[in-house]
Amino acid sequence: MNPFAKLGRAVGAVALGLAVAAPAVWAQDKVLNLYSARHYQTDEALYENFTKATGIRIQRVDADDAGVLARLKSEGSASPADVVLLVDAARLWTAESEGLFQPVKSQLLESRIPATLRGQDSGQGPHWFGMSTRARVIVYDKTRVARADVDTYEELADPKHKGKVCTRSGSHPYNLSLFGSLVEHLGAEKTEQWLKGVVDNMARAPKGGDTDQIRAVASGECAIALTNSYYLARLMRSTKPEDRAVLEKVGVVFPNQSTWGTHVNIAGAAVARHAKNRDAAVAFLEYLAGDAAQRYFADGNNEWPAVASVKVTNPALAALGEFRAETIPVAVAGKNQTRVQQMLDRVGYR
Ligand code: FE
Image (tube, rainbow, N blue to C red; front, top):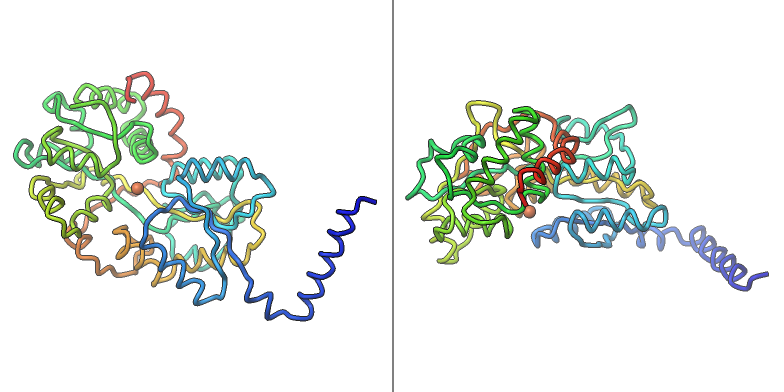
């Protein structure tokens, strides 16, 4: 017999003996493996609080959305991942459709997280839950652009804005999701025309992240740009003189308030398909939907809580004010993303 097989059995027997003899040791050793695309420093306190409340230690693997998905796929059933955190609805949708998650039936999650912010439920519960929301807003140079000229997404493609528009890459998830939502609101044909119009209006080729777009508006390189709300809120809470100067120049608008509402995306959580610690994973999702964790998302990373009853004290979010958000399920962004990518290729939106 293979000596390693024998060794394996012996180790197994010892472990089993320990579990029976000393359950307290087992309980202390409870672990949750978290694969996270959230890279916000303020999340540390969020994780520590869960460990304090439950005794479950969190082991984290950090990567971006694409990196997390690639890792889950390559690890397959051997993956140690229990919970997956991603920062975009289209990516959550993709992971679900690739069979990387498992459904979760939880009365608590269903009562707290609105149906439009969850994955589809085909009877066994949704495969993912939005835990916080962020709006894709328009920022503009107050000295060159009138607010009324940028209060809809449609106007980004208007020839009146030729040479003024900056965006990050069209195929970045934040943009893919926005464009996927436009397909829902405008139809495919009009959305493609719109994308073409945006490309025609560009001040420069797409590059950088959302904060770079805001800074490019302030520096005069562009006059109009798109950003997720929390990047702007982060600048609003900054005390650095250079950030204050950026905000002096830049105006913000929640687009489409008189039509379908501003596009909203989510950061969300799911239980991994091959989770070894399923109970702990569900407990963690329920913890994220709790009042304290929801307030962390708002106060720490300037997102809005997915749970409507949670009150926010963040001064930057208060300053941004109330707005009308679109009401279509965030999952449509995922459904439309392949089509949108093809449109981007056709119109030359890099
Ligand atoms: Fe981000």
